[in-house]
Image 1 (cartoon, rainbow, N blue to C red):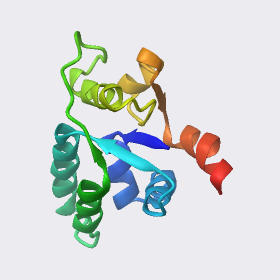
Image 2 (tube, helix red, strand yellow):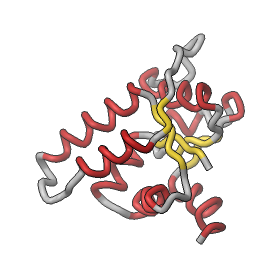
Image 3 (cartoon, rainbow, N blue to C red):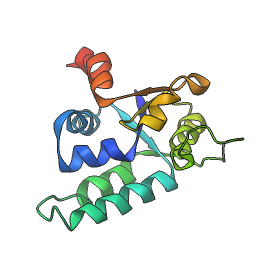
Length: 137
C-alpha cells in the first residue's frame, strides 16, 4: 500500500514513537511504500534538523536517508488552485495526485478538512493504524 506521510507524522514517529512510530515500523518492515516529492523531503529534513538541537539523543539521519533512498519520488505539478487553508500543505495533495496514491496520513487540521479531495483520504495516524495496520498485524 502506498502512502504519503505529512511531516508531522514522520517527525513524531522518529522523535516520539507512538502510532506514527508504528507506521514507520510498518514501512521499515516492507508493508508500506512511502511516496514523496523533493519539496516534501526538504521539509522532512528541515524540521528534523531543527528538532535535533532539542533531542540530540535521537538519530534521525539514518531514517531520513533510508526514506530518501527507498521512497517513490515523484515530480509534482502545482495544483490548479489552492486547496488547503495553509497553501504549504498542498504539496502533500499534489504528491498524492501525481503518484495516484489515495492515502495521506496527517494530524494537520488543514489537510484533514480536505479529505476526499480528488478521492484522496486524509487519515490521522490513529485512523490509519486502526483501519489498515490492524488488518496486517
